[in-house]
Image (tube, rainbow, N blue to C red; front, top):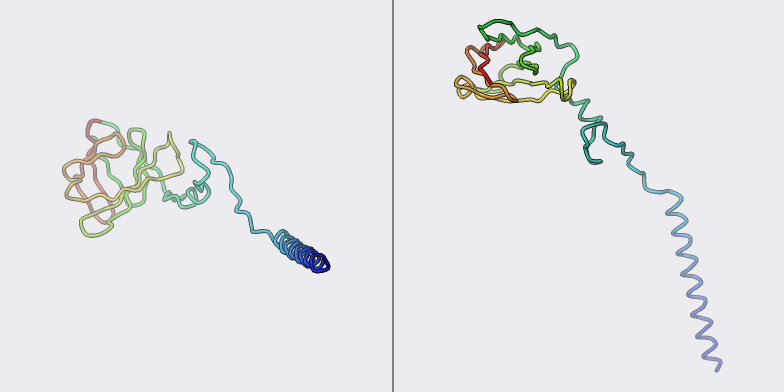
Length: 157
């Protein structure tokens, strides 16, 4: 009978020791919680929580010092885009960023109606652009290209 009492006593002491160790471990864990990643709701357009709006607006290709030049009016429809200068045409703004690699050039497009502070970057091949290419809903054709300027012909949409 005494063996049975000592068995129960050992089990009780072991359970109490496990409870104390578990309590100490939980207290230490709660004392230094894992850092919580702050998240803010999306600003517009119904983006999900995973979209980082602040980083996207900071990495915008649009420079604050870019000058805006109005598109020429008339039947010529020739657009001259100087390097790093915004040209407004048909509801969009185009910025020529220069040559990217051999046979390609970069153009940024801003849609003011959608987001006037964000530029969508396009890398176009010169050979294909001389035939015809499309930016948003407008068709264009390259007539001349150089390191400091790009001349486009605006075709009817």
